[in-house]
Image (cartoon, rainbow, N blue to C red; front, side, top):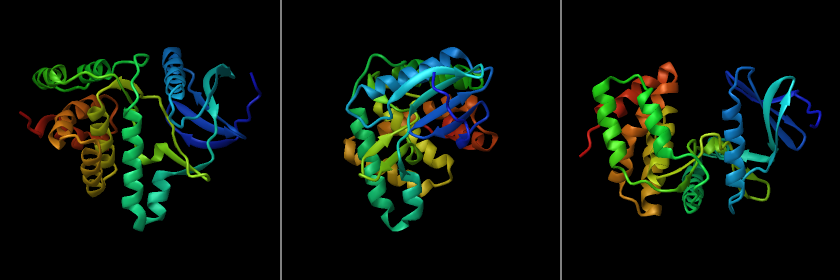
Length: 252
């Protein structure tokens, strides 16, 4: 194990802290963080790294001061979220590139990642919704086509890094799964909505459907399912919107 310097913090969450040490990124987990979750995250990154996509290279899984850590190569660049914020006049161009990257990712299939359908089923069961709502949503989920496309699970502009050479790297594969691309798109739509940007969310969905030749109604069918699956770990301020999508939106 290298002697990593845990000095420069990139991001901090409740159960994990992300550091940069030179050309490495170290994601240090909390003391109670389950080992299977650590290994799963490393596995997801390794699987994504075997595709032709631009993905940070996994370096190692190790322990630092008794805590689990996942280490990968640092990608020097600017996130698409930062570029969109700094260059408002280029929002449309950036959004188009964002969608192109997602569609390219969905062209890859895998059988080596968890099933997105099974993950959502577990989350809906633990969502806190009443039995009637759970039954309805699980029924919708069971009726949806099951695919094995590479799905990111947290595909948003802050997880796309544009390098100085104008290469787009996809980072943070902790929620990756194999599943239906439209479910992944519904997840991205909700992520935009949860940031309070409904206009950008609608622009995204229209672009995704146009570029992927997917019926908007088909992506919308996934919204209640994805929203319900997000309730388990939702922040208090997010629950009202997620409950709206999970319970109020009507589908055939």
